Image (tube, rainbow, N blue to C red; front, side, top):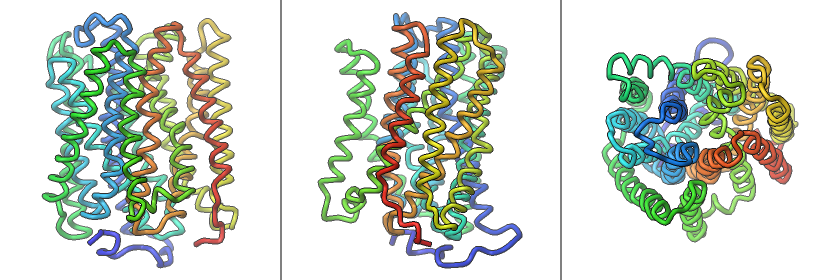
Length: 483
């Protein structure tokens, strides 16, 4: 029986006034889940930047190191993208609590193993497997919050929980230089890059166990065996498919961005299979016009998120000719803004909904402002031979503030336009389509840098995509009277 109907929910109840509530504890636990899972995936970017700067053997003698480094990030998101919909479906079937615990434990093991690999191919396989496990977190997190939070606070809850994303980004970005330095002292200079994966993987594994205990306490036994076996089977097939595409395309001499595009074809094939099941509950989600508009608009959001998350250290270091440590500190202004932006966006969205305005107008406004600010950042990089670290810090912070605020607005709007029984599948489809941006962005952006010797072109593309997504939000039909 789906968890959405098997357990008590917060739907239909008035929000309690004052005091700490059980759903606040849930938000805090899920915030921790976002923190550790995002730290695990974000650390790859700074580590790749360090490997490139030190001409490390891990990347071999690549003639286009940024393109290869970006492809590593893209392959992670190929795995992450492909379990979005299966993860939501498994959550609807086996329980959202179960899938959240399995995802974190999986991520911890895979991240630890990533730090033990000795060759590039093995490292890439572990990154893909990490993505496959982490891919089931999103749809189940959003669904569990909607299920156990009073409707009037759903947007705030989604914003508070996903604040862990920003904290994880910040921790990974700012700690990378120090963890690598520590790795050099403990493991030697050649293996210094391993330490971030070992530390963060161990921390994620420990928090995953804590999460499993908590999830059992709030809802009883977890259906871990069946769900894990299903996820293992699905992941084995998807990992083989991702690596087959990579090896064949790479052997044929295809550019890194082309490999990333081919990986997206796997996602479109999966989407096609979903549409083919038009008579099923799964197919009904794919026929929801609002879900599709939100999903395709979110390609730009995920593009922006993982362009800056993966390459922000390199962008700052290249533009200002600064050290790796200083560039990492400046890049944290991009990551840290989410600590304010996510809960603020969720709160504003809830208030706009309560006043009958709807969430859509705010979502459109924040997206337009963010897109314009990205274009301003690109123009600043283009017109200044050595940009100021302070100016870049301010621009990154303000731009990221609007960007992070708009995300829970979109999540809460999606929650409003689907039925409760289809929530996991809807969020899974939403992030599956959106992650196309995350797959292509790191590889294509790295290729553009290798070609032009500057990040300016990639930043302009990012801003233009965000403005295009605002146009899709305009087409959404929102029922502002819905509670």
